[in-house]
Length: 192
Image (cartoon, rainbow, N blue to C red; front, side, top):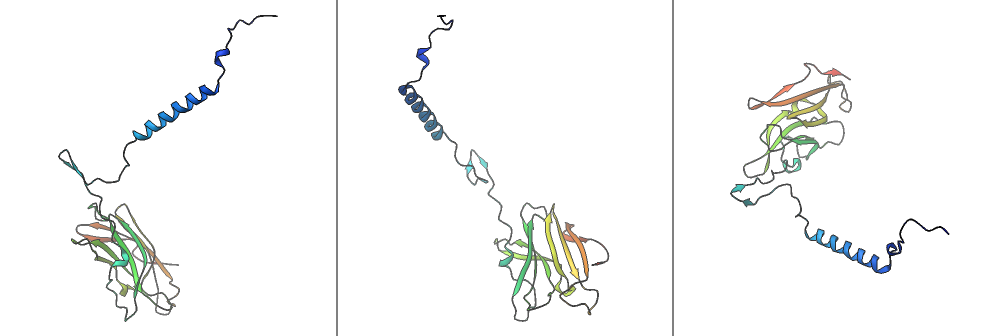
């Protein structure tokens, strides 16, 4: 019989006591790690520490449902059909743009497009009208991106076109410039 060149490794066979010691050591490491975990992360801090003042979280965008719109609905209620939020004027606080119209039983009532901001008392209020209901337009897509408001507006080429089926479409954009909203878009609506 040939003898092995490797020394006897009988001491390397795991016994139950070895498994128990390993499990106990691992449990101790996990318990210590759990105790040393940092506190939960927060999006904002309001505490004053070390002479530095940290900013509070900005107020959320105004709630479009909490505003009374300048619509003459003759007793019917107004309905918000589209809304989008974002910082439009660059002040670090979000505004909401809402398209609203009077509730109607049939047809497509004209919409108004309104910009909402928070008042000094933190209440939402209408600060600008981008589209007057008297323009007889309805709103398809409404978005706020990169400080601009973009909307797809639908209208009618004549009074003979049924109010259910607008035959004109225009995509427009508004930007805050010089203390007012400046509209850009095609000069004429294009037929659908």
